[in-house]
Length: 255
Image 1 (cartoon, rainbow, N blue to C red):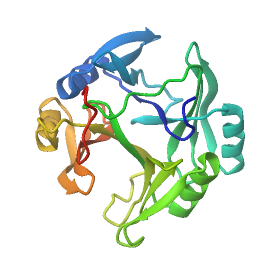
Image 2: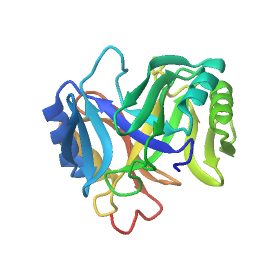
Image 3: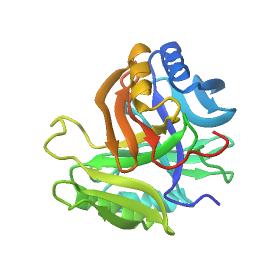
Image 4: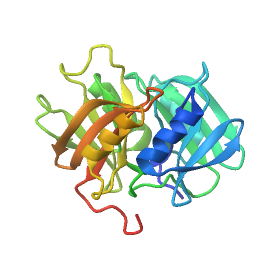
């Protein structure tokens, strides 16, 4: 079974499917297959990596991350008890499982996914998910919520003042992070989950950021070095923000 608290799926709304497809194909080489009711699945080497769907009043803008749960009813009830507010669901995705979107008590939207089959979103290859972190101001509330829901183990990175970052693990495996928004973040930026897509060393983050701009996107944060790799924050033509990273660790051999 897929491990609770690990990434299950990610998706983003788009009001211009053609522009979004062209953008991500140019940036990552994604191909596509139609699923249902306008929902499009993006693939890398024939393996699903993300979803694109028409926007609606029920779902927020930007990239949405879903985390595995073995029991959605239990997770939903516990999340509500801890102060989460339902955004959508629970509802059934035929043949895939049951999902729910909530706003966590610190203000970030996150999804829960009880999958029918033992499957997870592709990670590690260029063009696929590489990392994920919740970016928030109320760190104590966020830490307590996710620790209670998924049993995350925590490792502090930084001094907790100038840099307050925690790495969350399940069974000793690092699965997500939590970043405190400091004074350098825009005051109107709402808490959110940031997803990172891997970039191959042959391309590199700098060139990928240039490609994103040429394809109609924008660069929010210019490329910079980190202990985990070179990172940039960009937005697609519809405004969904995500990070590019050329990981300091090797990508999967079949990437």
